[in-house]
Amino acid sequence: MKKTLLRRENLAKLFAEFLAVMFSGGIGLAADTTGISLILFPEIAALAFDVFSRPRGKWATQPLRLIITPTITAALGVIVTRHWEYGAIAITAITLLSLVTIKLLRSNIGAAISAGVLPMVLGATSWVYPVAIFSGLVVLAATLTLWKQFDPHIYLSEGKKESQVIDAAETPPKDKFWIFALTGFVLVSGAAAQATDLRFLLFPPLIVVAYELFGHPELPGWMSRPVLFPLVCFLTASVGMFANSTLHAGFLGVSFTMVCSIAILRAFKVHMPPALAVGLIPFVIVHPTFWYPISVSLGASALIASASVYTSIKRRQRVR
Image: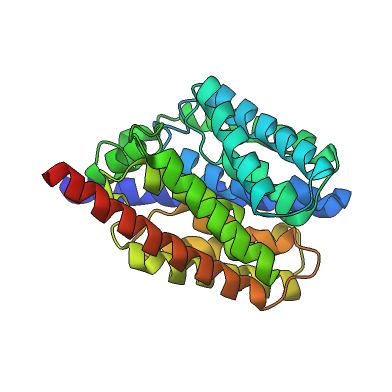
């Protein structure tokens, strides 16, 4: 009986991941067909993976906010990018505006921060960007609704401790000083990216991870092996680079990247949806180079080091 349930759970998980791959590939096909690369909003891969594999998770239970929150932050990102040049101050401003949006909407969709920052990093000023995000998320929410009709939660064991920890990490932060830690990290990392001209030292999904880490220092185990995060990001970024240069953008390239990235997450036994977004970013960069995966791994390493210091400080305060 136990083996049968485990087999059903594994099959359900595989099918959920298959849905995420097909959905992301479809978005890639739409971007390739229309010539509008930003239809492939990289964070949509992370959203699809999480909501399909955890249909009762925090992101999946807010389908309307799943659409609205990233759309609004994307529009705010375009507005700031139209008026400010790339820099640490501009990125921090977009991050704070995105956080205010999340707060006002009472949303759990932290991935919306990435939607806001991406225009500044890429220099995108077209209003097509938020419209494309809105369209893609409407399709994602509709597909999620259909997926839920099959009651996948029966087989996906969402009551497990791992899923509960992830849910806690995706809720709004309750720590008193997290906003200062996050703002400081974004400012310093943004300044380093600006000074070196390596914009992806502070890649958009990294701010989403920082939001969850600094916002929930009481959950140090939400990422069971945080030291692996830079390596995972480097590998998914490298896969995306390879697929973009050999398979081109489109269904095949995006699907290949998703399959390989999910396999990497499985191999390291981690649940890191933003790492999937990292793999798709090369498809929206005009001329990606080998500096992209290097910058990503350096930025991820800086975050893990910063979060470790912050968590250590918070622990000492609790002991006192």
